[in-house]
Length: 315
Ligand code: TXA
Ligand code: MG
Image 1 (cartoon, helix red, strand yellow):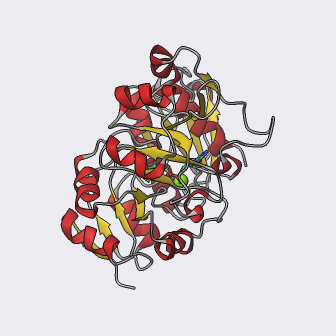
Image 2: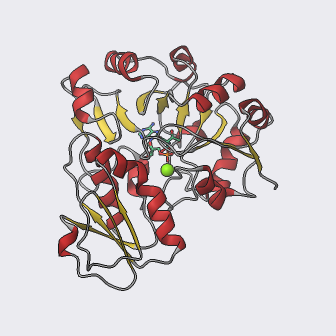
């Protein structure tokens, strides 16, 4: 298959309406979209990504009104989160309408819904006129793509079209909050932090960690977000015994005598989150053996960043 590269949301929308897949930019990471009501198109996502079929997709909507096409009802906590954080990097999990094919949600009776803020994503969704099911646009097991070049490296020849945009602003996947229970529960942390959510609904909690019970979010059981290189988390770069084939990313600079094949010093936690996945991919391209990553305070976006670092570091 030839993959078209374009900056035109209208050209990209034609692929969706013909049952093909389109990778598109969002403010979190690039997504791989298909018409959520087209079962054949949804199945193509699993093939293109080499993704296991028991991992549900997030539905992307152009406006809050489209939520009622997908969700049976909007729970009171979800209503508040939608009012405050849509459009943005937040996914709310709601009871699913039966009209949505069950392949979209891996057979679950719930559905994750998000309205991206990114203008190109918005333009695509409007041009399509239907909600899009869209996981991150990477091959399964690789870090999520934050640039169109990352998407191209994984999916060229496997999908119909790549809608090009700039590097994703946030750089980490959306916060996923389950709004179907008595209290909202954060299944995956992201740029909308636990503290942000608690300001709106104080009873919001983190979901139990992986391994303690069966995962509520099926995607949490896969090795995710990781480069091929080993990831080692360090409190400060000063303690690293440098090896020949190592890289470093963090906020604090290493000593002058510490040599790394790749290094990236970020301005703050936000900049670190923004740069992380593209850095992982660059290190893999260079066959780096170990990536040292500085730990950050697990607050705000720092919680999401630490979550991804810990997952990437767990082999
Ligand atoms: O930022 C994002 O969320 C990006 C962009 C493209 O929107 N998408 C994304 O999709 O990261 P994906 O498929 O890579 O991750 C979706 C996560 C998985 O961990 C999945 O298990 C969880 O969301 N999820 C989706 N629907 C769910 C549901 N109904 N219940 C619980 N977890 C759900
Ligand atoms: Mg993903």
